[in-house]
Image (tube, rainbow, N blue to C red; front, side):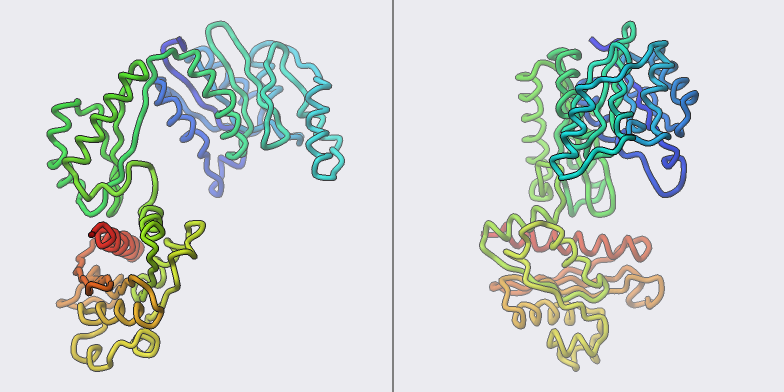
Length: 415
């Protein structure tokens, strides 16, 4: 068992101390450790200094049973993590011809010759196990030091993800034992955080408050459920929690995985053999952008009319001039006309029409900032919803796109 079930993480790189580069590897690692019931006790970021890196590694090894270091394993002179680890452990280093040959072979596969500086990546701390990097040239290293274990991994997210999958996760499974912790996710939309708390309160009583975590952002809530123990019992408890939460929250649960709403809606459209288009004013094409983030979206997404001006609302979406004059651009009538016009002119199964006041200016007493009308047009008719959304322009536009997709999802759920 990992000593005290605690871990530390060290991100190496002077660039991480500036303003244009963030460490994200620690988030991946923390999520993995949580599955095995291992507490992340400390995170740190240091620049490319042998002394600073060595000092942090030594301190972390003295405090926790697992230390993971990312970055500083490249071929350049400022990649000094290997040397720093050797200093921290009081060990020497040696050149490994097999590692050098593996790196050279990777270059040959791409028709290139390995540069002389890449030989630095074949330096190995004495006593280390070399971890093959299948996605890059810098191998990882695993070292044992007393009751603690040190992993040196590359900083490139794609590369560290591969090494975590092939080496760290299997090591954790073996070391942490069978009684691992596991977390599942449910995604909820269309219910506020406070309302959802009340709705799922019975599940807190049945499974404990600590087992269910609510993570909220505007118009999108993640429910995390966690169980620990032997795999069979753990999975049984997670299944029971998930069933209960779905029973309580109902159709507001849009996914049993950690996926975005546009992914779910796109899958539903594809499974139904349906198509969709949008006519967007205040969102400026944001709904269309989200739908087209998904690979293969051309199977169901036909196109978008971004109609900011009244002139283009008439010209492209066919909104009657008299509706604009009588009710104004921000109105239920215009939202319905946008959806119906887009559906007819683009020849789709479904269409979304969106118009509103995203701010910070443009609001009135009758139609304040955050007033948004969304309509969904389909073969059975057009549904409308008036939204009163808080926040700044960015937040209002995001929430509008989320709730518009949710309106379409609800229509797709209907028989």
